[in-house]
Picture 1 (tube, rainbow, N blue to C red):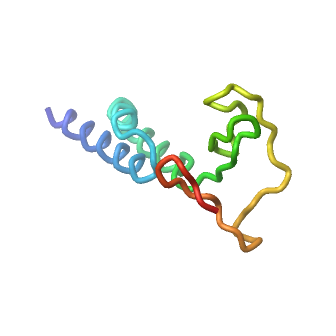
Picture 2: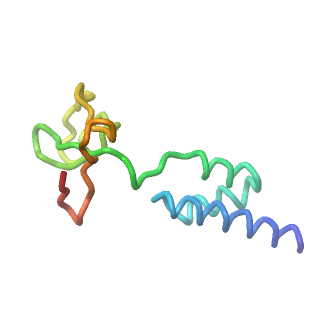
Length: 103
């Protein structure tokens, strides 16, 4: 019984960390529950989905992440942009607001 309580709290910690980073709570809860220490560690080391850089699809105008290779709306093959807007050049990454984004 005590082991299930420990598993529950490891799952809870992995789920909360992942939710803060913008991922699925339920998925990471299960990962943390099944892999007690390693699930929480993996949730800490994953990419923060809330701070990903965005760009427009050239064909349909859909807003996709820079690391996406294929547009999720039209299926167009996307090339990795040569010019990257980062924190060092005075520009902010576009942020999502509903279905729109602002630069």
